[in-house]
Length: 241
Image (cartoon, rainbow, N blue to C red; front, top):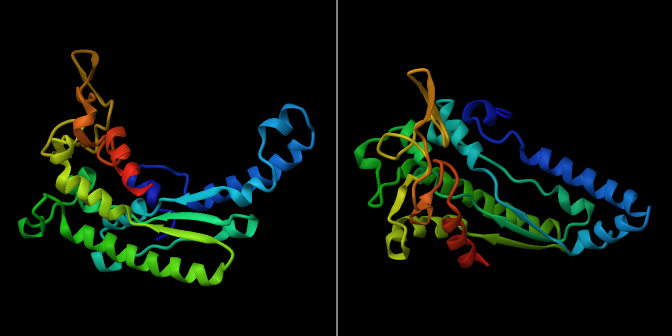
């Protein structure tokens, strides 16, 4: 169901449509304020800047995992991508597919799968298959967008493959902990849904930090069970740019 991601996962309430509305308002207001001249004219973008800017899309992961937490079957989880920015001048688009959600600690810890459904690198295959299904549909959408928006340059970026290679071959690049979180507490994946990064417990009248960051985040792929570390993101960036 729509509008359930926040309630089910506890993560960002800033959905894609909200981001678009914020962008649209900024586009309109920036041009109004820019006409005041002075520092406003210097700091705010010109109208033509919106047509020459690069717009990147990397969204959908929370929509997929929300379905799992609603007890939907793997076959019932679907997603989509919009194209509204074209109407306000956007012409250069960089659209990422979604990553291997079956390799995220917060998914593997909260939704156990059978041993036979774990791949050779420790990821949950059923959830990765859904991500690939989503990506297949997204790629078709991008192909259709190219037809519908002939004046736009739309690039489909296969982030899934890069992220999966990072997890499967991470140890070759200094990532000794491809599946355990850096900042968490307890369990096989150092993840506890009730004690996120920075989480504390009350002991003997005091709040005690138990979900502290690891000493060297650069050896971890995952930061808090959901998001990647800076080192992992740098690895990904260097391979898609």
